Length: 584
Image 1: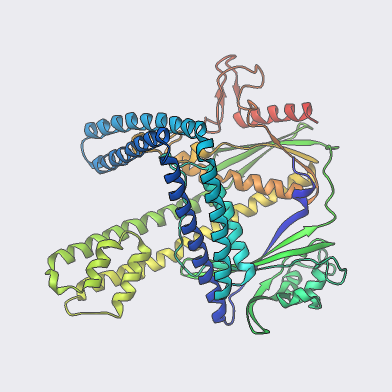
Image 2: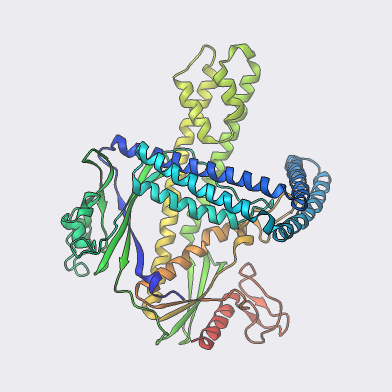
């Protein structure tokens, strides 16, 4: 259940246009953010290496760890052989699969033994590992000071450090399919990033809270970091939509750097399509720059604290249970079934048009991959026809190492454009033709993806808003999609679901729908209850017997115990309503 804390802090996002002029300091901040992240990742990798040395100094752990490393290497090699044999005889591939399954079972057993050995020898390694934790913390602190001296603004560096801590803790808990701890990865600067400020409210009434009115008036000391031109929100709900659009056009300025006492602003046109809640205080602001195709998009995210949020108590009105799924219904995709305590039923179905767009998106992605593969084969065939001494060294090195991704291949084509040499007409023309067509396909793919995701989010938001107006409490069951959506290993013929069904789960985006429901109910201070994962919502409600089913089963299934036909998601809703009544 989400109470006052989850309702008290919200993030409001507003779309921004392109800046009239991007200050050099703004681009520098994005580059420093990437370098700072990569430096933190390097510290984490060094910490993992030293931690490994500590564990290997204990004989009981070292023996198992080395055996696990050998098994993982063997498993990787067998999986490569399976992939290479995909166009050969099926019998040979089946033999490699059987071997991989055997190796993977040994890997799982060694992983359990390693965990047990580390637990048994924790006291022997505890002091060294705690000392490594202190080293990591102090090294990161010194690094923070170094990048601040280079000009990284404190708001940006704090946000990078916070995200690093979240990613580091998540990596410590997560394990990859091979059994190794998940690793943080360095990033390549691609122009994306953020400019952030934090508004530290003072105790004095003169400087707190930083409300929307003070944000518009520019009379607070925090207005030296964030400014928004005033927007007239009077009679906002009663004026025509066109008038709201006209009024909502404004400008936002955020501090990106300073030269002495002279501030350097990044100014963007913005559409403030809705006001902040009355009595709310802005705690932080962030302008996010994302890459969509070959251009950038901008958005302002305001973190707002709402003092008027009340503690959520027991529901006094009707309750609605929502069960998620991904069933094809007619031409659409049913992603949720609702059952109210008042007996009302409803379904959320994604329309056929949206599914067709997602299918077009998949076709465009496939066309890009196919044309990239053809271009790579053509260029490499041309290289084999040339004498080794006739080609410049930069070209042979680039073609050998950097043609696996369309982005790096595009970089080669652009570099080649200014470094032409005799005899390269055929190869350069083919590469340039591919680059121009891939650019068009990339723009199509990126913009189509944005439209698909935006359309789906709008459908989910309207659905959640409608339910929040009708019911005082919602009960949902968190879906377990980790194994459902994962790609199968090479040694398995297929995962828990088929390829087409996995794509349906990606289109459905159940977690996105769950988030929209939680946000809309929290906005109106209504209760959101999450059923425990141990609740058997997939057993037949009428007889409470039979084997469990899942959202991957047909729209109507037959109970193996009583032979009745029932809808899996509607059956799950009945379990949720029963659980809700028992825990009201």
